[in-house]
Length: 108
Image (cartoon, rainbow, N blue to C red; front, top):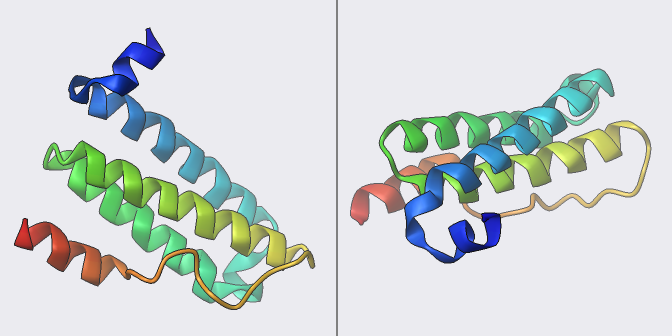
């Protein structure tokens, strides 16, 4: 069922839901690891992506919302890992900021 759902464009809300739940979990793990103060850039970038994903889902732009939620998860996991003292890079997961993503969405 899920594979069939992913192959059609009629189940965008399902994929978005999976991705935003993963992003929320990663954000909570990052918060608990102290990323708000140890890695604020990555942490707050992840929160901004998650907020923008929710906004896009509210406008039924599920594919874009799903991509933003995935970016949120990636940055939150990076913030968590860096806050825990693990390997981390100084480059965010994506080069597109939420403001740029908003501009792109408006152009479509």
